[in-house]
Length: 249
Ligand SMILES: O=C(CO)COP(=O)(O)O
Image 1 (cartoon, rainbow, N blue to C red):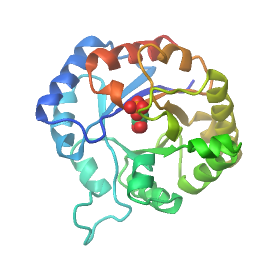
Image 2: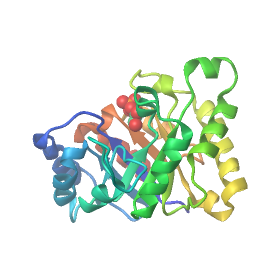
Image 3: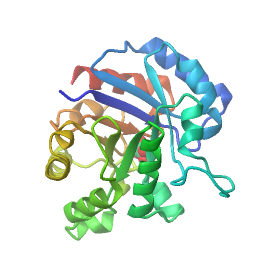
Image 4: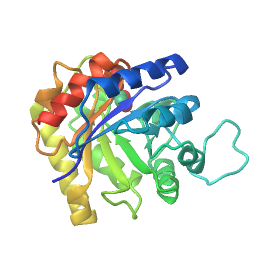
């Protein structure tokens, strides 16, 4: 049995006052052993969020890290700095960073390795564009991103894979359950082929316009072990029912 994971990515949203949503979430949900709950706030909130989350069953993660341990990289944040705030996870290779910051698979792989070196769990994101899907290349594109973005030392404990079709992010458009199943089954087969039992145990999240009203359907897929949620993770009243749907799946 894989431990499920409901992860919220706040992206560049949230000030100190937004931590009240974390407290409200803790009130609204009943944490259980089968389902991890994670909030990834902007970097300036990591320490305060980690303190606020103590004892709630909610974990805290960052949205990016640098691939090097330290150095002259103005404005960047190392994995050790993230771990130092009390955070336990970091998202790497989100499509918004791949696009706006020109991150390629090799850079994402380096970031995941840096995260692992600091005992952080890396949530490695992959996803196809709409044009790639229309051209019938989805499975090949994703297999390539998965192979290139995952370091060889990836294990079920230190790595989570998030499939986020770029055309579904922030658009309200969601793939059909059949499309999600097709992708997740394909990714599972690739993970098992490369990592054996660890690949079987690694969590595979779906992300892209997950909302309270579609979460239960998405969580029906065997190889969907949770969700990476953007907009609907900002408010406890939206994220709590998604978590509850995952717990019930
Ligand atoms: O990019 C996402 C999470 O990382 C998904 O964002 P939305 O849930 O807002 O579509």
